Image 1 (cartoon, helix red, strand yellow):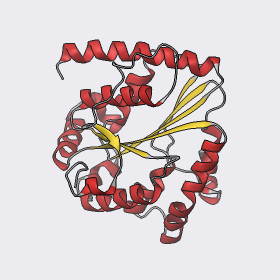
Image 2: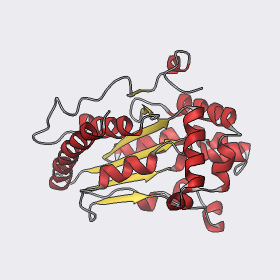
Image 3: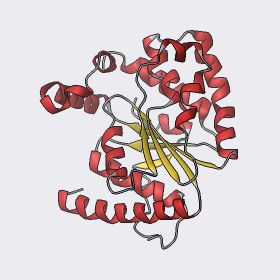
Image 4: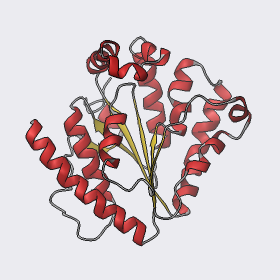
Length: 252
Protein backbone atom coordinates (compact mmCIF):
# COMPACT_ATOMS: atom_id res chain seq x y z
CA UNK A 1 0.00 0.00 0.00
CA UNK A 2 1.47 3.34 -1.09
CA UNK A 3 1.76 6.29 1.27
CA UNK A 4 -0.94 8.36 -0.46
CA UNK A 5 -3.43 5.49 -0.61
CA UNK A 6 -2.69 4.64 3.01
CA UNK A 7 -3.34 8.18 4.25
CA UNK A 8 -6.55 8.52 2.24
CA UNK A 9 -7.92 5.16 3.35
CA UNK A 10 -6.90 5.73 6.99
CA UNK A 11 -8.73 9.08 7.07
CA UNK A 12 -11.88 7.48 5.66
CA UNK A 13 -11.71 4.70 8.23
CA UNK A 14 -11.13 7.12 11.09
CA UNK A 15 -14.32 8.92 10.07
CA UNK A 16 -16.09 5.55 10.33
CA UNK A 17 -14.57 5.07 13.80
CA UNK A 18 -16.10 8.38 14.90
CA UNK A 19 -19.49 7.14 13.64
CA UNK A 20 -18.96 3.95 15.62
CA UNK A 21 -18.12 5.87 18.78
CA UNK A 22 -21.24 8.01 18.45
CA UNK A 23 -23.26 4.79 18.24
CA UNK A 24 -21.49 3.31 21.28
CA UNK A 25 -22.22 6.44 23.33
CA UNK A 26 -25.84 6.74 22.19
CA UNK A 27 -26.65 3.09 22.97
CA UNK A 28 -24.58 2.74 26.18
CA UNK A 29 -22.48 -0.04 24.66
CA UNK A 30 -19.25 -1.45 26.12
CA UNK A 31 -16.43 -2.42 23.75
CA UNK A 32 -13.21 -4.17 24.75
CA UNK A 33 -10.46 -4.75 22.17
CA UNK A 34 -7.43 -6.87 23.09
CA UNK A 35 -4.16 -6.58 21.17
CA UNK A 36 -1.62 -9.35 21.56
CA UNK A 37 1.38 -10.40 19.48
CA UNK A 38 5.12 -10.79 19.44
CA UNK A 39 7.41 -8.00 20.59
CA UNK A 40 7.57 -5.36 17.83
CA UNK A 41 4.40 -6.76 16.26
CA UNK A 42 2.90 -3.31 15.71
CA UNK A 43 0.40 -3.06 18.57
CA UNK A 44 1.37 0.49 19.58
CA UNK A 45 1.09 1.89 16.07
CA UNK A 46 -2.24 0.19 15.38
CA UNK A 47 -3.79 1.46 18.62
CA UNK A 48 -2.49 4.97 17.97
CA UNK A 49 -4.29 5.13 14.61
CA UNK A 50 -7.52 3.76 16.06
CA UNK A 51 -7.81 6.32 18.87
CA UNK A 52 -6.29 9.29 17.02
CA UNK A 53 -9.59 11.14 16.47
CA UNK A 54 -11.79 9.53 19.11
CA UNK A 55 -13.08 11.23 22.26
CA UNK A 56 -10.56 10.75 25.10
CA UNK A 57 -13.43 10.76 27.62
CA UNK A 58 -14.95 7.58 26.19
CA UNK A 59 -11.75 5.94 24.93
CA UNK A 60 -9.09 4.34 27.15
CA UNK A 61 -5.86 2.51 26.38
CA UNK A 62 -4.68 0.07 29.06
CA UNK A 63 -1.03 -0.99 29.08
CA UNK A 64 -0.22 -2.34 32.53
CA UNK A 65 3.34 -2.55 33.78
CA UNK A 66 5.07 -5.10 35.95
CA UNK A 67 2.69 -6.56 38.58
CA UNK A 68 3.20 -5.44 42.18
CA UNK A 69 3.57 -7.79 45.14
CA UNK A 70 -0.11 -7.19 45.88
CA UNK A 71 -1.03 -8.07 42.30
CA UNK A 72 0.94 -11.30 42.55
CA UNK A 73 -0.97 -12.32 45.68
CA UNK A 74 -4.41 -11.49 44.21
CA UNK A 75 -6.72 -13.38 41.89
CA UNK A 76 -4.91 -13.21 38.56
CA UNK A 77 -7.67 -11.31 36.71
CA UNK A 78 -8.16 -8.85 39.56
CA UNK A 79 -5.65 -6.27 38.31
CA UNK A 80 -7.43 -6.18 34.95
CA UNK A 81 -11.06 -5.93 36.04
CA UNK A 82 -10.91 -2.25 37.17
CA UNK A 83 -9.99 -1.32 33.60
CA UNK A 84 -12.93 -3.04 31.89
CA UNK A 85 -15.27 -0.76 29.92
CA UNK A 86 -18.37 0.79 31.41
CA UNK A 87 -21.34 1.99 29.35
CA UNK A 88 -20.37 4.28 26.42
CA UNK A 89 -16.71 3.28 26.58
CA UNK A 90 -14.24 1.69 24.20
CA UNK A 91 -11.20 0.21 25.97
CA UNK A 92 -8.13 -1.08 24.14
CA UNK A 93 -5.73 -3.40 25.96
CA UNK A 94 -2.15 -3.17 24.72
CA UNK A 95 -1.34 -6.66 26.00
CA UNK A 96 -3.73 -8.14 28.51
CA UNK A 97 -4.29 -11.12 30.79
CA UNK A 98 -2.78 -13.18 27.96
CA UNK A 99 0.65 -12.16 29.29
CA UNK A 100 0.38 -15.30 31.38
CA UNK A 101 0.15 -17.51 28.28
CA UNK A 102 2.97 -15.68 26.50
CA UNK A 103 5.82 -13.77 28.09
CA UNK A 104 5.19 -15.10 31.61
CA UNK A 105 5.25 -18.68 30.35
CA UNK A 106 8.33 -18.25 28.16
CA UNK A 107 10.35 -16.17 30.61
CA UNK A 108 9.44 -18.26 33.65
CA UNK A 109 7.54 -15.48 35.45
CA UNK A 110 4.76 -17.93 36.41
CA UNK A 111 4.87 -21.58 37.46
CA UNK A 112 3.24 -24.53 35.70
CA UNK A 113 0.26 -24.58 38.04
CA UNK A 114 -0.48 -20.87 37.44
CA UNK A 115 -0.09 -21.30 33.69
CA UNK A 116 -2.44 -24.28 33.40
CA UNK A 117 -4.95 -22.67 35.76
CA UNK A 118 -5.03 -19.64 33.45
CA UNK A 119 -5.66 -21.69 30.33
CA UNK A 120 -8.48 -23.53 32.08
CA UNK A 121 -10.22 -20.46 33.49
CA UNK A 122 -9.77 -17.68 30.92
CA UNK A 123 -12.59 -18.92 28.62
CA UNK A 124 -15.00 -18.83 31.58
CA UNK A 125 -13.79 -15.34 32.52
CA UNK A 126 -14.32 -14.07 28.99
CA UNK A 127 -17.73 -15.71 28.77
CA UNK A 128 -18.75 -13.73 31.86
CA UNK A 129 -17.58 -10.54 30.17
CA UNK A 130 -19.55 -11.27 27.02
CA UNK A 131 -22.67 -12.20 28.99
CA UNK A 132 -22.39 -8.93 30.89
CA UNK A 133 -22.83 -7.07 27.61
CA UNK A 134 -19.19 -6.36 26.72
CA UNK A 135 -18.41 -6.65 23.03
CA UNK A 136 -15.04 -8.43 23.05
CA UNK A 137 -12.60 -8.46 20.13
CA UNK A 138 -9.20 -10.21 20.33
CA UNK A 139 -6.42 -9.56 17.80
CA UNK A 140 -3.08 -11.33 17.52
CA UNK A 141 -0.54 -9.42 15.41
CA UNK A 142 1.72 -11.98 13.76
CA UNK A 143 5.08 -11.16 12.17
CA UNK A 144 7.91 -13.19 10.68
CA UNK A 145 11.18 -13.88 12.46
CA UNK A 146 13.08 -11.69 9.98
CA UNK A 147 10.69 -8.76 10.37
CA UNK A 148 10.84 -8.92 14.16
CA UNK A 149 14.64 -8.92 14.09
CA UNK A 150 14.65 -5.93 11.74
CA UNK A 151 12.22 -3.93 13.87
CA UNK A 152 14.04 -4.63 17.13
CA UNK A 153 17.35 -3.58 15.56
CA UNK A 154 15.64 -0.38 14.33
CA UNK A 155 14.52 0.35 17.90
CA UNK A 156 18.07 0.06 19.15
CA UNK A 157 19.27 2.60 16.57
CA UNK A 158 16.41 5.12 16.86
CA UNK A 159 16.79 7.49 19.86
CA UNK A 160 13.02 8.19 19.77
CA UNK A 161 12.21 4.51 20.27
CA UNK A 162 14.47 3.82 23.25
CA UNK A 163 11.47 3.60 25.59
CA UNK A 164 10.28 0.57 23.61
CA UNK A 165 13.36 -1.51 24.40
CA UNK A 166 13.32 -3.86 27.40
CA UNK A 167 15.27 -6.94 28.52
CA UNK A 168 12.29 -9.04 27.40
CA UNK A 169 12.58 -7.58 23.88
CA UNK A 170 16.22 -8.56 23.73
CA UNK A 171 15.24 -12.17 24.49
CA UNK A 172 12.43 -12.22 21.91
CA UNK A 173 14.53 -13.25 18.91
CA UNK A 174 16.57 -15.78 20.89
CA UNK A 175 13.38 -17.45 22.16
CA UNK A 176 11.44 -17.37 18.90
CA UNK A 177 10.57 -21.08 18.97
CA UNK A 178 9.47 -20.94 22.62
CA UNK A 179 7.20 -18.00 21.85
CA UNK A 180 5.80 -19.83 18.81
CA UNK A 181 4.90 -22.85 20.93
CA UNK A 182 3.34 -20.69 23.65
CA UNK A 183 1.34 -18.77 21.02
CA UNK A 184 0.07 -21.95 19.38
CA UNK A 185 -1.09 -23.43 22.70
CA UNK A 186 -2.72 -20.15 23.71
CA UNK A 187 -4.66 -19.84 20.45
CA UNK A 188 -5.80 -23.46 20.48
CA UNK A 189 -6.93 -23.38 24.11
CA UNK A 190 -8.62 -19.95 24.20
CA UNK A 191 -10.27 -19.61 20.77
CA UNK A 192 -14.03 -19.80 21.37
CA UNK A 193 -17.15 -18.92 19.39
CA UNK A 194 -18.02 -16.24 21.97
CA UNK A 195 -14.42 -14.87 22.09
CA UNK A 196 -12.58 -15.86 18.89
CA UNK A 197 -9.03 -14.90 18.02
CA UNK A 198 -8.55 -12.78 14.92
CA UNK A 199 -5.13 -13.17 13.33
CA UNK A 200 -3.35 -10.25 11.64
CA UNK A 201 -0.46 -10.75 9.24
CA UNK A 202 1.47 -7.67 10.29
CA UNK A 203 4.78 -7.65 8.38
CA UNK A 204 3.39 -4.70 6.38
CA UNK A 205 2.49 -2.13 9.03
CA UNK A 206 0.24 0.02 6.82
CA UNK A 207 -1.84 -2.88 5.55
CA UNK A 208 -2.12 -4.34 9.05
CA UNK A 209 -3.33 -1.08 10.59
CA UNK A 210 -5.88 -0.42 7.85
CA UNK A 211 -7.27 -3.94 7.95
CA UNK A 212 -7.50 -4.09 11.74
CA UNK A 213 -9.63 -0.95 11.68
CA UNK A 214 -11.73 -2.37 8.85
CA UNK A 215 -12.28 -5.57 10.81
CA UNK A 216 -13.36 -3.71 13.95
CA UNK A 217 -15.82 -1.65 11.93
CA UNK A 218 -17.01 -4.72 10.04
CA UNK A 219 -17.77 -6.66 13.22
CA UNK A 220 -19.54 -3.90 15.18
CA UNK A 221 -22.90 -2.36 14.29
CA UNK A 222 -23.40 1.38 13.88
CA UNK A 223 -25.51 3.77 11.83
CA UNK A 224 -24.57 4.75 8.24
CA UNK A 225 -21.76 2.22 7.94
CA UNK A 226 -19.87 2.30 4.61
CA UNK A 227 -20.10 -1.45 3.98
CA UNK A 228 -17.77 -1.44 0.96
CA UNK A 229 -15.06 0.53 2.76
CA UNK A 230 -14.91 -1.63 5.89
CA UNK A 231 -14.60 -5.04 4.23
CA UNK A 232 -11.18 -6.37 5.41
CA UNK A 233 -8.68 -8.27 3.28
CA UNK A 234 -9.06 -11.94 4.26
CA UNK A 235 -5.41 -12.61 3.42
CA UNK A 236 -4.34 -10.14 6.12
CA UNK A 237 -7.04 -10.42 8.81
CA UNK A 238 -8.80 -13.73 9.44
CA UNK A 239 -10.28 -15.91 12.17
CA UNK A 240 -7.83 -18.32 13.77
CA UNK A 241 -7.94 -21.94 12.63
CA UNK A 242 -5.41 -24.60 13.62
CA UNK A 243 -4.81 -25.75 10.04
CA UNK A 244 -3.44 -22.29 9.18
CA UNK A 245 -0.30 -23.28 11.09
CA UNK A 246 0.37 -25.89 8.39
CA UNK A 247 -0.32 -23.63 5.44
CA UNK A 248 1.95 -20.69 6.24
CA UNK A 249 -0.83 -18.28 7.25
CA UNK A 250 0.74 -18.03 10.72
CA UNK A 251 4.49 -17.43 11.14
CA UNK A 252 6.54 -20.40 12.34
